[in-house]
Length: 202
Ligand SMILES: Cc1cc2nc3c(=O)[nH]c(=O)nc-3n(C[C@H](O)[C@H](O)[C@H](O)COP(=O)(O)OP(=O)(O)OC[C@H]3O[C@@H](n4cnc5c(N)ncnc54)[C@H](O)[C@@H]3O)c2cc1C
Image (cartoon, rainbow, N blue to C red; front, side):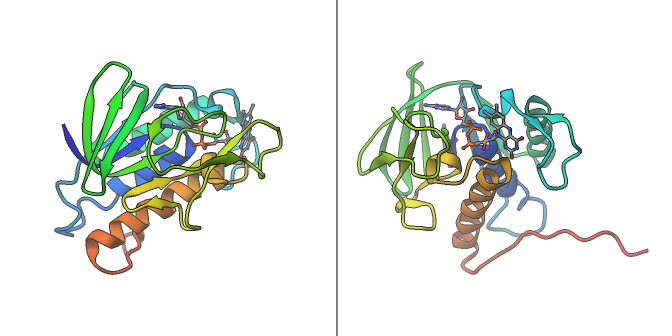
């Protein structure tokens, strides 16, 4: 099973990354069509425990569980992304040919890998990843992965969400996922891109 991007972690950062990636489809951009994405997730996002009153633009008292469902439906509306409830345990390889192995023993190959597993722990076996104490966490014992300042760990390998050092708020975590998605799309386009929609003219 070969994918353009494998996203590990389906919370605020991972799903926001997936949403921006799939939203490039259907616009007549040849470089964006027929791309395949997968989100591997163990279903333990911090959002499951949240009641959102302060997420910009989101109706107050939306639960995190509802937001997870909304995000999933948004992604599915564009097509191109699969979801699998599995724990990733190992990442091997290099840009263009990463292999992600799960607890079930399934192997997924991908051109890019985005790690979005939250800041509680990091126990995926992978070379070249420096795990440090997270200085932006309100609680001790949280972790962060060192990156280049633009969420790149090394070529093709990215980190987003709280594990990338975003402050622990939905929009901050989501924003890092969007930023990485735009970076990947821009690489494929060969120029900086944005995906902006406008209302139909009246
Ligand atoms: C109680 C509570 C209330 C909150 N309230 C608010 C609020 O009111 N407003 C606000 O803005 N923010 C709030 N937040 C913060 C917000 O939920 C987090 O900032 C956000 O969820 C972090 O996103 P993330 O993608 O980094 O991690 P998460 O959303 O936690 O997602 C990480 C995902 O990775 C998966 N995962 C982990 N390891 C693996 C693996 N090896 N393989 C596959 N999948 C894996 C997990 O199952 C999880 O689904 C709240 C958080 C909590 C805990």
